[in-house]
Length: 502
Image 1 (cartoon, rainbow, N blue to C red):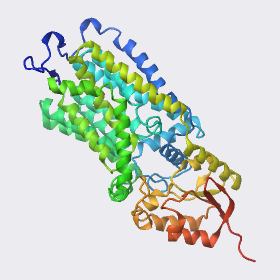
Image 2 (cartoon, rainbow, N blue to C red; image 1 turned 90 degrees about the vertical axis):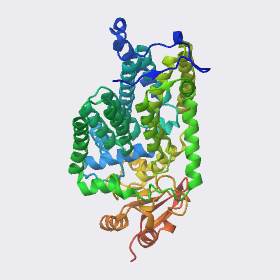
Image 3 (cartoon, helix red, strand yellow; image 1 turned 135 degrees about the vertical axis):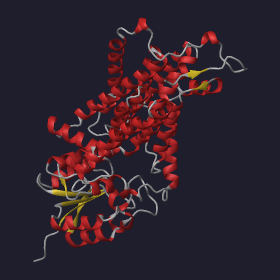
Image 4 (cartoon, rainbow, N blue to C red; image 1 turned 60 degrees about the vertical axis):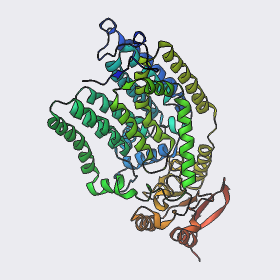
């Protein structure tokens, strides 16, 4: 049983039956041959085109820098959730580690290509799902629209090879498999999404809805889905240590997920990113809204997918732009379904508007300067000049990419000041400081610095609320053992080990 779009034939806002294509659950027999051999190359070319800006810079976001530094730590014997820590699940750090092992650790080019492949796979899965429900034209529209709309954010969010991009194929695969009653595969896909980012679990809701509505033997289907979902997650926990896995991916982020502190700042970010995505969706939202006015939709699982993805965006109350990528697959599927009810020219109009919006965002990505990256590169050059390749350094800030760009190992497992102050997420209000750190981090941090003092400490706070003069432990360390250099780098202060008296 598959979801369709049903249209009333009477009433002031109805659509004439002659203009309504009959919903199909299988492609037209005459058009089966060659469908994918034509569509996939076109989608591949479009995926590469829409991600061309990603190849322009060595890094796009601190998340990429964090993952790159983690991968180097893992390659030199680090243990995830022990000597290498982050709040994210393990799949992407392992992917970065594997890419570095195969291609070297000085470029993210292979990860950029992997991100192109991830978006291509997502588009193909959405095309397959839409084609099964509404036919060939809907399938092609869904795949193309996904690639066009997914560019519609700040390039730092849309072009980076980070968690959401690699999570999307798993979420699309989960719903596609559930649509085909492949319950074990759907569970595996949800597990992959969860192990990429926690909010990938939002795909479980439409999977369960389809299971409840379509599975003839619900209990058996639920058992298969649950076993396939829990198996990989439990394996990941066993590999990394169950207690550490649970702490770093679930229970250790209470302060980070709080809405208290910087409410106006966070809400402004949320509104700005919502507006950006709305521009990217200018071609597809009107058809969906129009069909809602004139038709009863049977695509309840897609609406549930969109609602659960919106809840995932709200989780943590930070509203970063890359969170919004999770909304794109259900949105484009709803649009593909709606456009089958409307006249053909509406599809052309939607595609044209989406192409124009995509061109706007691609131009932004190709032409706009990256001042924070330029700062990180200048700071990395200063770190290289003041330290030896084997030295460990501490960069006190929120840009871990400095370690990677400088080719220096971090002096601590905590790669940003955020884990030690709760500044992560852009908080600039009262809930920043030692007492808001992830539980147990400061004793470990002090022990690490005492056991292996960094040759160089970089204070990159530049007036932010996590500055050392607001943190007693770091302030005492700098006063007792380090001396500032006269030269500053864009406001960042470099400290070297002070010579002992006498």
